Length: 248
Image: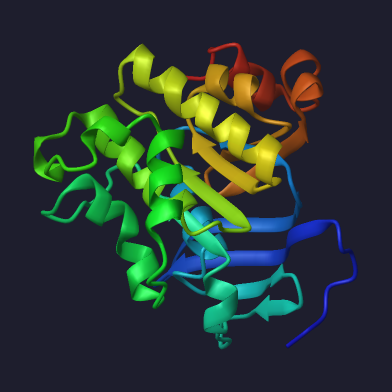
């Protein structure tokens, strides 16, 4: 275990690489994710965005380098304590729901953790995502937007320190996009939850994020506060991406 040196930093990535066999998927020299911020990672498909989220959620270990999370340093041969893993939750682009009702899906994680007095928290999460009226409806009958909101409720009911979102509104209609974005904003503002959002949608990144980073071919090209990222990017590749001139 190695101790980080900045209490305002949720993650610190140093010389992190991820390889599968001989193919390098991700290579980040330095990235710091601040506590309580919304960081959007943008880039084309195949840029390494989802791989980065899997590393941040401790689903995989880096092939090289170190990922600091608080006092824990995740290295290629390291392990992460359960109590640390439970501080981070991910909502994936295509959520897998249980063949049960909505309420049972939202309560599932709490039950796994042995939290039996969870009814109030489940009710609050359902209200937050606007699904109280569907609490007893079977998950397989939900629309895509409703299913994604169930997945979001299932994550936030755990009250994580960090919420990782992998293309959370891809292929959803404008109504559900707006709902989910409002939930993300309020969660960050009210609870101070650190949120890392992966998206190819630069408009969504601009609406939601405090800072934005561009991944291309596994490399972090540029990261900056949202206004600077879009108004005065330093790298010409960033400018091409935000202006829609990058073909991929």
